Image (cartoon, rainbow over all chains, first blue to last red; front, side, top):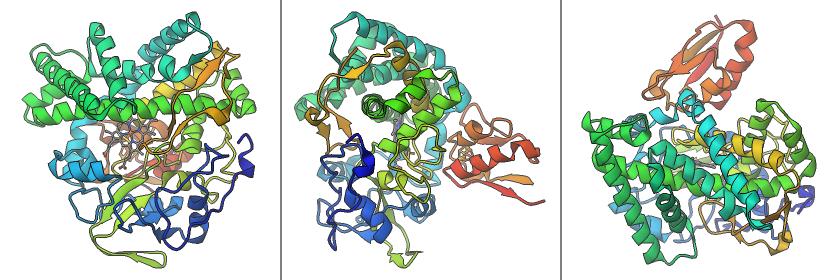
Length: 413
Length: 65
Ligand code: HEM
Ligand code: SF4
């Protein structure tokens, strides 16, 4: 594992590989070997998914950049050809409200512009000090507690939950409830009906809070959305759904980039040392993008459907065909990232597609970057002896969720 | 060299502002990009090229003239 150069880059893919493709057990942080082989042999090819349908799989960086912004490539999950991630997503599509996550331009553009304000780069930058405080306080608590500890529950999950609470404008006295409920919703071991109940409670909580903020606005995201509801730019229901979506979309992803990111850095002590010793925020920022590239944690691929025939390379994607974009394969494409299997925090990493590409590229990416810059720039300096307190073979990885992850990361210092 | 910004295509990601803060800004309320310098100086062109590369909507072009 420590030597990614030795990781397999070919895997029995067969004429119609089953997607998602399995990772190699000995290389838990590398893309699936078959995805790497397809990228060089059959960069746009059909795969079979859970419901027996055979969407296209796109693995090259350049092809993804050509297709994802193409207006014929649609996020309409009501189209019968849409390659749903799983049966649950297929079942809820017809009863889900139309949001930024399932619409195309011009509807998508309109909806996205109503929620974009808080994520404007300059406004996100104002969060740096509050995020630093959240991170410092959590490290203080961790250092005062038991050693070893699970980094995921002690640190990685609370960071994004507290940050999003602050951004949305959840009052401080409710942070405990907010953090407990959002962790329960994401905890795969919680029974489904319990998770549904808690997620209903969270939605009801945000619903109520938006009403309060309408009467008594503050400088936060829920107040801003309340204002847009009053101005008729979005509905109250859309505002509640967006609040929940921001919480869900930003929690596990960011937490995973903290836990798996720490694991990846501990596996590359030379790179971790460079990061620990730098005073240059640009070096830290680039390290964050490189770890995003290296891990590309969204593991189920970005899903779309063709609204028209599309000719690309020597294939024709037909109207109604599903398309899956494997982000990890593209981010290890040697044509764009030479020696892609090396974690190298000094390489130009900015054009990775870990946040997707095209109009649906991650809404929260600037916030996620800021959180990770503060974490990577602080944790390893304040805890320079941080080390893994388990054998990597004993860690349990999550191969089924939308985002890759690890069920617990025991660390000591 | 001249910068062209296709505003209707812009999805307000702010990646251009991160790459070339002297050339691009964003509207405060919805994040749509604003072109500050249509003809940026030589020293800013690398930043602009990065902005072109990272713009998720392919809304920025750097053209001759
Ligand atoms: C490191 C952390 C994160 C990663 C790796 C990540 C990854 C992604 C990816 C790959 C997409 C594109 C999906 C597609 O094209 O269909 C996406 C979309 C999205 N993300 Fe993130 N994300 C992260 C953090 C966040 C945060 C912090 C938030 C909110 C506060 C957020 C909110 C969203 C939303 C709302 C969308 C849907 C955008 C649209 O469809 O227009 N994400 N994210
Ligand atoms: S990078 Fe592109 S999409 Fe994002 S704000 Fe700039 S012009 Fe708009």
